[in-house]
Image 1 (cartoon, rainbow, N blue to C red):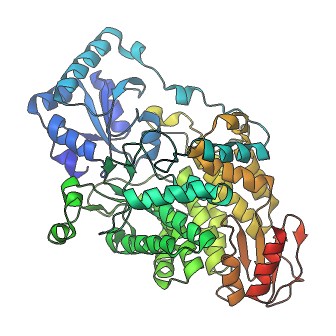
Image 2 (tube, one colour):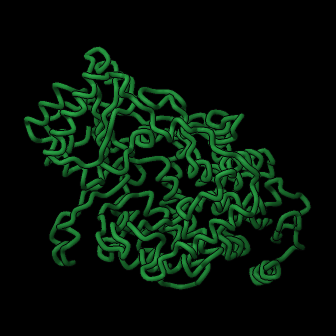
Length: 557
C-alpha cells in the first residue's frame, strides 16, 4: 500500500477477490478509493478526510475499504473512474456500482457515507447498476475510408483555440498524439499548440512537462509530471523538429531527454519511474529556492506501456539527431521491456519500492506500446537483432488473446477478475495504438495478416467515426495508414549508414524504414548500398546517396 494510505486511519484492503469475499460475508458495501501517487487531490483527501478518526471509524465499521493505485490497475481505473482522481466509488460486494464522487471533504464524506449506508440497508443489491460504458459494448462497425481522417483533420482547425493554443475551451491537455496528427495535416495548429505547451507546461528549471492546465488560457497548472505524457511530448517535439528544422523544438526535446534520463530513471529497476509528485510550493519557488530544496519524490514503479512510449520517443529523437544519450537509454529500456515479455505476454509493471503486488499480464496498452517500440527499434537500430522478433511475438499474443473475432476490436485485457473486470471493455485509443503497431509490422515483414487484423480493429469503430473528436486523433492516424499504405523506404544498407540515417530523416513521421532490406527478405533483387522508395504498389529505382533519396521522395509529393 502506498505511504499516503498508511498515514490515514482507514484499514485499507488491497484490490482483489479477498476484499469482495469479505464484503459478501459481512454483507457490507465496498468503498473503492481510486488514487495515484502523482495526484495532489488524492493526497489532500487522505490528509483532510480519511485521517479524521470518526470518519475513518465510520468507513471501517460500515464498509470494506479498498485502495486502488490506478496506474498499477488500469482495468480497474477504466471501469470505476467517475470523472477524475481521487474517485470515491461505492459498490456492492459483487462489484457493481452504487454511487460515486471524486474528491470529498470531511462534511461531504459524512453525508455520503450516511446516504450509501441507508441505500444499502434499504435496497441492497437491487440498488446496483453497471456503467453504460460497459453495458453498451458493441461498437458500431463500418468501412475504413478516408472520411475518418478528413473528419478529424477538419476538427483540428474548427476546435483549435487560436487565442491561447491547444484544442477546446476548457482545461488544456497537451494531446501529443493530436499534435503529431496535425503536424502532417494542419501544421500551424500543431505548432501553435506546442508553443503553448512549451510556454505553460514545460519546467525550465528541472525539465519535464507538467500534466495539464485547469483553464483555457493554460493557467492553473497541475504540477505532476507523468512518464507517459513526457515520453509522448518528447516524440512530438522531435517530430516537429523533423518537419521544421527549428532548433527550438530540438532544444525542448533534448531537455526532456535529460529530464527522463536523470530525474525519472531508476537504476533499481533499470527503467523509468512512473511519475514525479506535484509540490506547488516547490514549483512556485525561484531557481535559487529550488536549488536548496528537495525536489518532489518520484514513483519508482516501472510501467511497461509507459517505458515503451519512452523507448519509442528516445529512438525517434536519436533517429533525427544522432544523440547517443537517447540511443543508450532507449537500448537500456528495451532490455528492461524484453525481460517483461513472457511468451509474448507483457507484464504490466515492476515495482521499484516496497509496495506489494504484481502487475497483470497481457493488457492491451502494454502489448500495443511494447510492440510499437520494438518495431521502431527494428527501424532505427536494425532488423538483424531480436527487436523485430519481439515485436511480432507481442503483437501475435495480443491478436490471439485480446481480439474479438466477431467484432474485430481488441479488449483491454483478459476478461476476468473481481468486480467489473469480467466485463469486456474495447477502448478506441488502445485499438488505435495496436492497429498502428500492426501496420508497422505489416510494412516491416510483408505479412498481410497484420494489416488485415489492423483493419478489423479500426473498422470496429468506423460506424461512429463522425462522432470522434481531436482527442482520439490516434485513431484517425491508424485509419489513414490503412487507407493509404505508409510511405516505406527500403534501405539495402545496414542501420547507421548514411543512407539509412537519411531515410529516417525523410519528413514524414508516419513512414516505415526497413534497414538491410536486401537481407531481410523484402526483395532479394535489391542492390546492396542502394535505397528504394515504396509508395503503395510503386517501387522507385535505386538511389545511392542521401541527396538522391531526398530528390526521389520530393518527386512523390
